[in-house]
Length: 166
Image: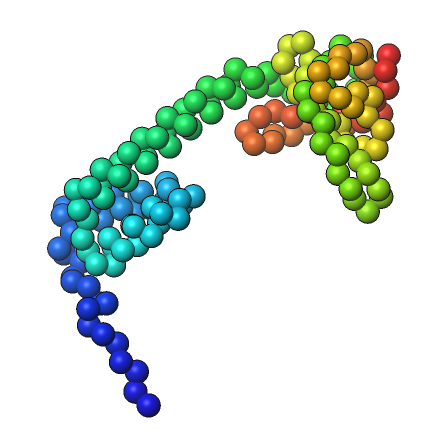
């Protein structure tokens, strides 16, 4: 039994792409990895060594929109990222506002992930079964211990434990 490979799938040689087009396609492929549409179009352009002017315009437009979204996201996070709170192991009393609460179910039962924000804009994250503030928008003075300082999605995050209303 022989396998037939049609010659029309082989495509022309790589040299038929315009100068700089291959580099443009490779860069676009890396930057637009989230888009199945872009990945399919780029794969076909590379496979058949053809890039139309309209395809180039679409890819450039997608790259510009992504760059604008990334710049807006960076600007938003730069102003909201105020750094870590306190030192690990330290006990603090602070007036905080509950920004978000997400209830989950784990092997030890139901628990909440609560994000609190200080008046200076620093984020404090509590994970446990009995949060002091469990509704968004609530404000109170809490006593807590800093458990860990880390980064989450490019923002400084301070994990807290032993939370009580002061």
